[in-house]
Length: 286
Image 1 (cartoon, rainbow, N blue to C red):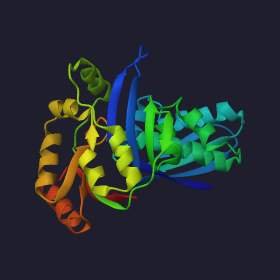
Image 2: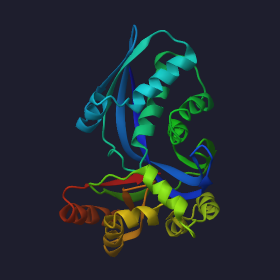
Image 3: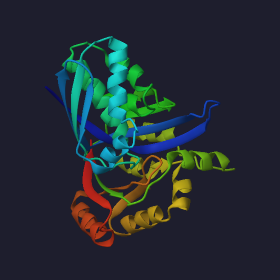
Image 4: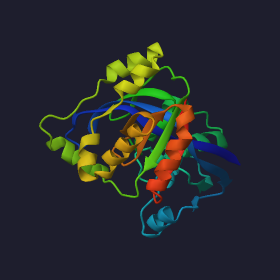
């Protein structure tokens, strides 16, 4: 039996450079793992892939015929390695679904890492990343996590220095965001916002926490906020109540705020009171 933790991510900076003919987008972004994580347990079986889910929404999707990304990852692993065995995977889901925090991608990455250990195949991180990109653009980053510059469609990764421990508060509205729609609307913008990703990378290299906070930026934020004004409302509330900066992660709808440690609990309490149906919790990255 193998256990794996699948860590969520946030975007410190996300720039969309353009759309390819195949529909994928070229991006330049800095992704950061945080302490929030799902838990996977993997056990060998003689044949087949069995997935046990503790989340009602994921169960409903599977029952409707939609293949879970964990199953896709396991199939990709067995196809790559030509192993005839199988696996039973139990998922404990803690990361909010469809939140812009790579919850599915990180589960797929943990599946690949876990199978590599379970079957002692000795695949390198780079080899696992090559399998991962066939499953999803964020999967290669999630194989190792940490702090990385991500380019191409997400498969070109460059390690960056990890920042000092930073306290954050996460708030995910009780809404669904279509990533496809967000990118389509972004493509229609005449003058989209482009954050300075290179400056963010330099701030991380210099260990300048204040500059990191100031340089937070997301090309997709304006689009998602126009579709869901609650995102802007949450950011405003956060920044009026102790947050240094608040920004959306990925294509949304999750908003995270950088906060001082002594203000984190108060902000969490306020957000829970204001938005009792939302996911609200204090986290950190380092």
